[in-house]
Amino acid sequence: MFVPCGDSAPDLAGCTLLMPAVSVGNVGQLAIDLIISTLNMCKIGYFYTDCLVPMVGNNPYATAEENSTELSTNAEVYALPSRKLVALQLRSIFIKYKSKPFCEKLLSWVKSSGCAKVVVLSSSHSYHRNDLQLRSTPFRYLLTPSMQKSVQNKMQSLNWEEMEKTTCIPEIDESELCVRIPGGGITKTLYDEGCSKDIPVAVLLKFVSEGDNIPDALGLVEYLNEWLQMIKPCVQRDGPTAAALPWKIPSSWRLLFGSGLPPALF
Amino acid sequence: MNSGVWEEVGCAKLWNEWCRTTDTIHLSPTEAFCVFYHLKSNPSVLLCQCSCYVAEDQQFQWLEKVFGSCSRKNMQVTVLTCRHVTDYKTAESTSSLHTPFLKALKTQNFREPLCCSLLEQPNIVHDLPAAVLSYCQVWKIPAVLYLCYTDVMKLDLITVEAFKPVLSSRSLRGLVKNCLAASQLCAAKALGKWCSRAVCGKHAGGEGAGRFRSCQRYSGPGRSGNTWNIPQSTEILKKLMTTNEIQSNIYT
Image 1: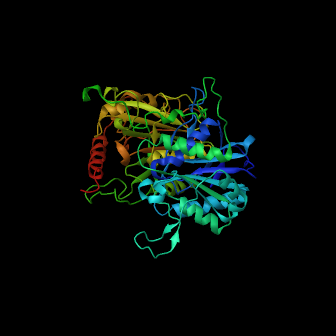
Image 2: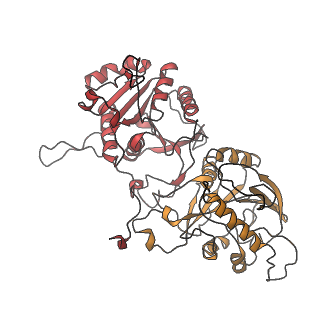
Image 3: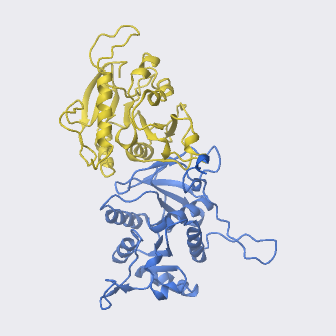
């Protein structure tokens, strides 16, 4: 499944794997794009799998003529060895019935490669929120048991909200409570697999609606950054305005809503 | 294919909801949808004529079956396909573009000069051509995709002529005897998802030995000098156009 770019497999022991779930608004994928682009991560390998719809295009993080000609596929792995960060980017949807096999293959690769933890960036339909969720922050986190031991205190110190359990059958109040992530794609599957296989998985998600989800992606990476401290804010010289984090928008985000319009339309 | 003698060596049969041929329409050989030919004078040169849509859940298996049976050493792949120009993303309106035009995508190991400009971000390619290119990129096989953006839904000579620069490329010109005539005869096939030519071959060294392009099938002897027999070109063109019409709407 994982095919390295070079001749030998890279050493991922102790690294943190960041990955998206293909979910509502594609927020997780946009967030991973921002991380790879801002941290200038380099490609270390591909996931060659029959689980995702094939697609190709030129380097989505191109900054100049020289680096714009590298071909990119639907599932690629990037790394920043100095920070022990690895990012998996998924660029297409799952083929029918293949999402669970993908999760199983992915997590077994995570285990065999020695990654310290997995962070899944995801989103959930905002219209599914209950009254309590509507009144609070739109960000939530979830931790598998093996992750809770090491990280729960940090989450509490950051005042983060854990994803609430809701009734398994929405209309019936007496049914069991469980975690539901509508619109979250493989998020729940990854979380359940992580629990059963004892893999440290953290899920960070935002309640979103479809639309222009760039602000949601920026919100999600800043939420992640509160914990992982991937980048520091740049100091603003003029006045006490809050320092902005210098996220770099990838060149491939151009024309997100289609080509230019014909002038004859107006 | 009119430039040499091609022998059929295999086929990849598949069925999906897009395959709606009737009994009276036969793509030779009967019922085969992806036909493989090799050049008799140089059997390491292979051509695949793909006249149907390979569905997304069939693409991986198609690749494993086709590429799994040949050695990756010294292989080079050329893919020719078409898309409608409305698929092309650009800052200006697509109605102001001069169609048809050619764009290319290549894998990391492809070192030859290209016949046209590269496909700019944020444009992407899907379907079988993308599956082929992904396979080649991952397994480090030199491969190039030439993609023609056109504004017509039916096959026409103007769209086909857009591929002319490809015929003059270093890898293909040894396989095409008369570029001008060949481009007029060639039905480099139609549009959208249901037809793309995957063309692959082993690069046995030397000009033209590695690749070829797909044209309609040549049949019958009797070619002299620069005059070309057109025994089946019109027939095959008609067949391809009818197939395209049938497959253009799965609900009819």
